[in-house]
Picture 1 (cartoon, rainbow, N blue to C red):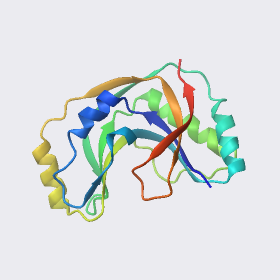
Picture 2: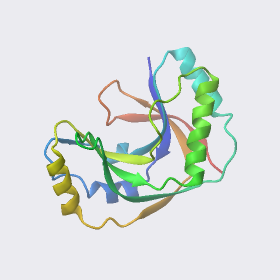
Picture 3: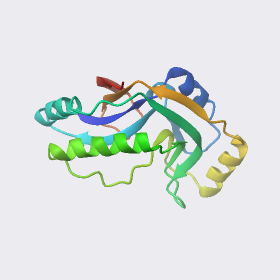
Length: 178
């Protein structure tokens, strides 16, 4: 049973810039830079027949121009119980529209609605046990975050090992933009 999701790959030079924010937070499990991505639609564990349907329907997505992507700062999910450190991606109308189209396509083949609100981001670390104070100290120590911008030439269909997240991820198919 494959575990699939769609997303935008992060170029190596942007990944290296983000990797500079690794470390200095007790309880963090840092994602390897080669596995950084922006998830558009988590599909989950599905059977082979559904995986073929996903692969085929993604090819029906409308043509669109390559996406300008801006990473604008660091943040955390989980509030008082932090569970991840991430780099925030500017939710441009183009990125939000692309994600909405991915959702519509997955619904068309019978997959359930994604339960979480779409927040474009690049996960840098998953937090096993981290106090809010340690996370606040981590952010203070990092200081200013310069915006990072790149152009995404394609959307990828990724597979993931059945694990707690963080890779390895494999590009199973790619769908060019532009």
